Image (cartoon, rainbow, N blue to C red; front, side):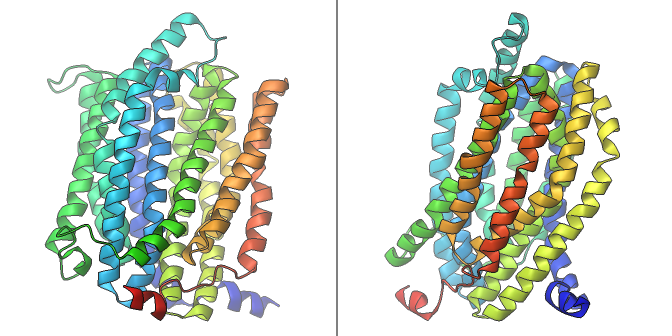
Length: 470
């Protein structure tokens, strides 16, 4: 029995060496990005609770935008990974063009919504039971932050269009270098512009936004410049802008496969923001505590998030090369490795629950609630790791309809109604409410298990027939 388990879920040294070569730079890049957000968050938290709340609320909407961009590049990314596995750079070029077009549209739409609906969006997270002065300050700081962050949508969106293709080619170090290039500038400018150091003006939350936007431009520039100066490794970029032509059959297929992913990612992110809004019904103190807890758990969550992305790339390449049995074996081993690694990470987070909230200049009861939330989220990490791995498994084979049901169905049919009812129609303590909603992820684990076990996702979507049509 043990022998069968090891054969199914444990790979050899070469397997893990290849996985780590790919995933470690991806994890480091995500860690760096989240570390910058953490430092930015702490610095803003040093100014005051209202400033932290305003920034936290706006970041809920930036989060929705970011995840929507990920969803937009994910659909063509499925084809791109399989084209790469097949050695078809022309097919990759078409998927790249599609990504540029779709993220440009999303940037334009997001900018218009954030600029014109800033008051309405921020007020969604402000309870009428809070003090008038607290409400007014939170809204003011939130709007200041949002109006500057709109500019940062441009480099983030275009940068992700490039980074997603670069990763498909196995060059995961380049996005990491881009993040490293930006991190020092971001931290320096955060400190200088938030607090008015080194001769810079003291700008508070506006300074934090300016620092973040500048760092996003630097990160995007590094990835874009590398792509265009290394055409031997990025053959798809040669002539990529000579036209916007994409074969009709491939366009239809990318839209068919990509639309469910785009809407799924958007609706999932929106769903997470709706759940955050449900918590905010209990007051801005809860918003502040959840902001603190999410900052540290997001940092360590980079491990399981990027392990999922690794599954999408490696399993997708196997499927594109028509190595279907290898794809199944690889997926089993990566899924187990992802959960095992996340258990270790979760154990590392637990001791930080009491320490991390002390870095914030806020009230003791907010710190205590944040500590509790960190513990709950750390315990839930292995569950999130498993469902994230299941999601990327389903996606690797182009089963975007299943991923839509898996993510959107669970979030909107169970998690949101549960959070809404408990927050608005019961007197349940916020601590118990947070735990119940968080651990409802167990239901998603069960659904994911049966979906992956069904093998419906094992599918080559760039077979000879598809390629001939190009």
